[in-house]
Length: 414
View 1 (cartoon, rainbow, N blue to C red):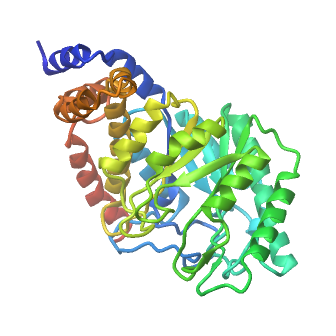
View 2 (cartoon, rainbow, N blue to C red; view 1 turned 90 degrees about the vertical axis):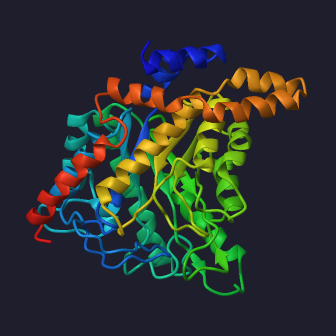
View 3 (cartoon, rainbow, N blue to C red; view 1 turned 180 degrees about the vertical axis):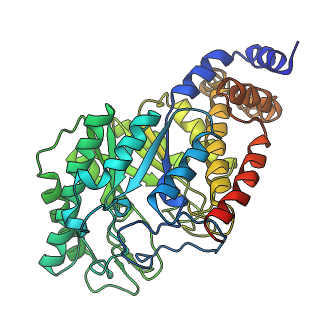
């Protein structure tokens, strides 16, 4: 009996249907963020990063053009199993003629991304880019200057129209996520005023007539950022209340909370009140530092909570990290594979037995099962999944990255 069959038998002894777990995993999409490949630079020439965001490191090989970025994305797609989507920021518009400012972008500026995704069977998700721009110095949708607010309102409404085209042409929903960097470095004199202006701006954006079945608008919170340590306009309380009252999705990024908070504990509460919830999974190290996602306890716990809540069709999950200190394709691949590993690990847990033990207040059995499952042969099931998905098994993918890196650095002149 080969290792997969033996491992499958052990899991089935726990009451786990391994084949069903693999089917569910293959149908669960993970949205791959485009901005890991070029250090969040984008193609609209806005200049250095701003809005409390930093990309650290100067590892050679950064994608400098849309063609190079697409090539790198293709490389990652070939190394990672499972169903995938692609997550774009508006700053990745591709201008073949005259460049326009962000409030004037149109679907035509994303035509190459639509064709790229269509050829690969990917859905597209989208994000207005309210940072790294001359009009994003400190405040955007909450700015006291109505002209600056109107600029960013027009930008977000343009993104809504683009998202609709993504959904129509790719025959799948588009998750359009709004996040603002607005906040203050020191103690504010007025907390409510900026939040009221933000609320009014969001209301005006959503007043646009758009297809809510095709475009799923989400609102993302953050606890603080560099240069806005004392006050963040789009706090968790604001975004959750706004999303619930307006019938849009809340988006939780597990780097956007205090270090002692965990998103895994929040999911069940959010799912009781929202038909769908969006997630950005990252790895914060002391703060929202956007490190590569690991196969660590919190990533596994987020995945387990999605499975426990029977919410694979209600949680829209994407990744959000950017590490320029290591090979960018390897960073992408490690993060994508680790998120998929976490989902498989969760799908192989005997959730019904764990729930039964808890409901019976049999906490001894509950603890025993949780601990014993940690040493079950998950890796053999994962290796089998990679084989049937026709992607490299174990660390075989890394040799492909190393071989590609040598050619890539020569090609890109580094």
